[in-house]
Image 1 (spheres, rainbow over the protein chains, first blue to last red):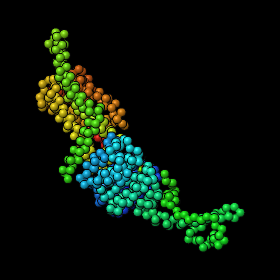
Image 2: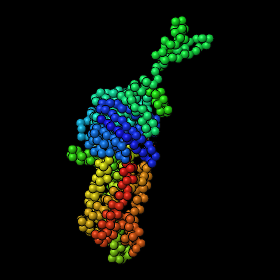
Image 3: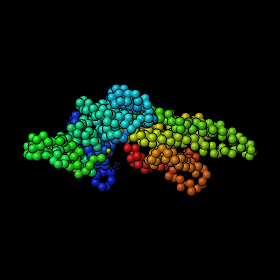
Image 4: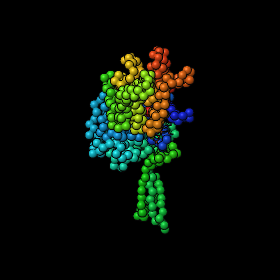
Amino acid sequence: MIQVVDLSFSYTKNKFLENISFEVSEGEIFGFLGPSGAGKSTLQKILTGLIKTYKGRSVVNGIESKDFRNDFYENIGVDFEFPSLYEKLTGRENLEFFGSLYSKKLRNIDEMLEMVGLKNDGDKKVSEYSKGMKSRLNFIKALLHNPGILFLDEPTSGLDPNSSRDMKNIILQEKKTGKTIILTTHNMADAAELCDRVAFIVDGNIKALDSPHNLIMPKGASKISYTYLDGTEKTGECLLSHTSGDKKLQELITSNRVLSIHSSEPTLNDIFMEVTGRVLQ
Amino acid sequence: MTHWKYKRLWISFMQYINQIARDAMLFLSCLAPVLYGLFIKFGIPAAEKFLTGYYSRKEVLVPYFIIFDLFLVVLTPMMFSFASSMVILGEIDDGITKYMSVTPIGRGGYLISRLVFPLIFSLLVSIIVMNVFSLTIISLEMITVLSFLSSVLGFITSMMVVSLSANKVEGMAITKMSGISMIGILLPFFVSARIQYLAMILPSFWMAKYAMEGKITYLILCIMVSVGWILLLLRKFMKKII
Ligand SMILES: Nc1ncnc2c1ncn2[C@@H]1O[C@H](COP(=O)(O)OP(=O)(O)OP(=O)(O)O)[C@@H](O)[C@H]1O
Ligand SMILES: [Mg+2]
């Protein structure tokens, strides 16, 4: 569905996006993860044909991004990082206007509003919406014409946990209908949950690319840590796969002296730090 | 598909008209040419009657009637251009222009609906306004040409205002400043000889020369200067709207 080969681009004379290559297959959710300023939104702008002065190849649905014709956008849905809505119009009027630019049959506006909890706010002016409400409206605006490819730039940022949960469910629901989804996020947990594969982007380069599972597994194996009393409270640690080798632990278990025991898996966050040497956010 | 192409442009243009109609200031500015038209159609001849009696001269203002007409012919496109600039700047603020580029209407279609359609619309309105309110008897042909030239001038002004201003407030200031370029209309009448050619970069200057003397050379120069301005502003303008 999407092929990117040796892509490079910069806003200035200095190098920025360099040697970007990846493929996204149909029906996949593909994540861009990286700290602020890494170039995630820039990469999305190239893929959606907003920036045409890149080098290398960026092919979406068989067509080079710089050569997109207007009709191509009938099948593309974009949710930019910042809302793009008429502040003076109501939520519904916004959807009606943008929807009318497509020749396809639209999805039902009321159902869409309800889906993101804006059922009772459709006739309010967008200028009266909260930040999260604008994000949600902006999100369904991208789904209205039922596009086959979705570009979502931080769709859950600024949402409360409930709305964020709802939105993630909708994204998974859309995936089930066969859509290909490109998702940008700072949030590791979201990426781990939603994405089939993620690309770690730092300073304009892809530092790692794989499924969250494959990224996590070979790196840190799961660990357990335990506490016990030995005069004072002490802690011990060993790998989950090597419990039989931990004599102290065995001794504690057989003598019922374990105070607490926890296992912990490395998170995508840990892996990100390990691979890129950078923290997210 | 072609049918949809035109339908989209029309929908987007109606959205533009809607925004003007909802905004009291923009709506009133679009009415300004009619107010000015009423003023010159009835006020100026009355003033002329009074002045000729007062100074006991045969004519006082009559030689300058064409200047009032020239201001009338540029006023309509200027007001529409102001409205376009305000609408476009508002849409840049709201992120709409960027979004339009990733819908089937595209950046080009958006521009057509915000600059070219308004140009045609203001041309039509200007021709009607001139036919109703013009003081001097100029031919329909002349009216059409002058209306066209001033509509192009409006197009250029919008491009300039949008390219140079960061927001609506700056846009209003720059629109007012661009009003200074209307001085080009007065120069051929009041400044003799060579000095007037200092204004040769202003399309309005060549327009006034053309209206005065009817020489086709002036018409061509006006168009060339206008195209020059458009080419000069195009890149900056395009950059501004994504
Ligand atoms: N239009 C522009 N002109 C010049 N530089 C820009 C432009 N847009 C972005 N940049 C620069 O490009 C870099 C990457 O920006 P980008 O928006 O792609 O980052 P990002 O990874 O999406 O960050 P965030 O997570 O904060 O959204 C930044 O240094 C930014 O200042
Ligand atoms: Mg971004």
